[in-house]
Length: 394
Image (cartoon, rainbow, N blue to C red; front, side, top):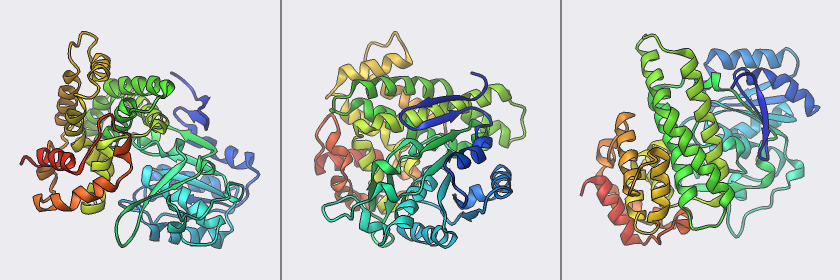
């Protein structure tokens, strides 16, 4: 692929090297004059980001909120909304990985509605979101993991309980995505691996869920093929780059482009819902503040072994994406374990640094999580104990 292409699904996506440079044009297209950038602390220090802010500031009155770090929490949202309200922002530019994009969406809600972000969290007493009041969001993803830039929800943790809360409305879907693989070229190897496995988990779980959505199934399978083709290349290039070694720049960019596509495909596919891996990972983030992508990466093979007996024919289809000659769906799980090892991702929770005495704390949080309700095999508290116990090596 060469140049920048456009596709809609349903978000308008401008995809290709240099797409970020179309930001001013996008702002003008909305008739906005007071945009506000929302990003994380790490991105705020990068040269390409400061150059982007400078370019926008030369034409528009611009504000920047960059106090996002770790798993996003409600206080970050409220602090960001104070900045955007103070600036009277009429457009939000979400720049970063899943955390920054999710916080951007949540800021858009508080910016345009009264109350705290937790008032709008999914549940029987949630306050309604008036989509007509929301400022438009332009998203520039800097990682290839959650695909939040093409999603209608945000996941924000409660500051005190650390419980993950979902903010959902179709109006939260960014209006334009400037998907530029160049901005992901400097992502360190460990984050490339963790976010890449996050995208892979979305694709796999979406395909396996018991919901009927053949269009998502097709997207998920193609996304898995892209991950299998390019995630290792992206990680290897990141390692060599960090070591000062020469890399094939064209191959690196192509791999990053594949992963950016795969990430958005995963987020598109999981409108078909997710499964037990995500419930396990959400509990790890709540109890141990584990990076979401890394938690998925560690837990995915264990969760898939649990699911294999329920849908063996689907696992065989997955295995044949990796190896057309595959004879058994279990070969896909073997591939997952090998990929995890080659990417230097811990093979279990103990090597991840999670204390075994957290087991009893993890189970009720995982049981309460909604994701496993769509798993192809029902999951009880005893099942979660067995899955976690295997991951702990017990």
